[in-house]
Picture: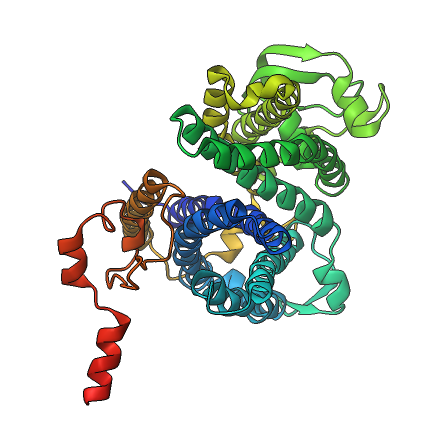
Length: 484
């Protein structure tokens, strides 16, 4: 069987990006939540906010590390699998990705150390400032990444000479037509992800009657956030859709399963797209609703997929269903957030098992929605790397063979499986330990474990023999140094 290097390279990049995307979208929202907790502790002196912050900082540290490790590989792939694309677009993408490192990653790296290890070593206000800087760094990082990605969807501010892209206007290229809708859409998605994970974990502790007052505060705080963020995402998502309709009508046609350019287009609730025959089967639709949503006119015209050749159409079935999965989860999020408001009467949101179990299940849904949204965004652009200008086939590394692509794909799957397993293992240890004992590895005597991430081990502080074997006191070190 002949292996297609283009198809395998696309699968590899999709796998790596999908695996990586679930970490930043969580840490961006969680970093802001931690900064909020640190601010509340700084203002009120209430130890509950400090305990919650310590607990979620540990979760953040593990997930942040997994995100960094999984993200490094993506840059490598531009050279290994997509060298033609990297060379062609280097004059824009190279500086933009460098700006992300200089302005965001350095900021995060510098203040993350203070956030993780500076408590009780720096003034409380400085620790709060460090939390804010880490949160700011995550947003700066997402800005540059989304600027580069948005430029590939709506290229601007460049001119092509001798097959290479040269920047004619940095402001137009960076602040391209789809940047801001995409940025705010992803920012709210990050808040929703962080919010539903915090709510789900808090509900898990409440169901087990562990630290009820503490996690009740966290749940109450998060439900207020979700009540405003979930409906806001619907509005921003609609604006993002209108922007896509203006700049990438073929993608919207695939999202709507619309084959023929026509007026009064119905909104398909269910259909089985048949791309080979350019039609749908078993349609269930609401008349004229798609036209109204996209054009604000019941009889508005919506372009069809037949406007472009078949070989320039995206994979319609995947885009069509990924879009509906994302929308369905968004509606469920709004419903849960509104239900939380009604459950506040008599504080039933703290005790009703069905509601708490619903929150536990909802903790997973933001990740599914994010992945579905990325499938819509990236597959809806196919077959273009730079929309309507530079195709996937044009960007592939000329010397790449199918065997080489398959080998690296299998390697990434195996390595990422180990990374995910290790990260999940330590996350489960953090969750089992809870917020009762979080002191970054120091016990009451000042002893510190030498084993990485051993603070996530719920049994460490209870095992004096193991502790004495692996730890050494600060006084012992001082005495030894003095003797020398």
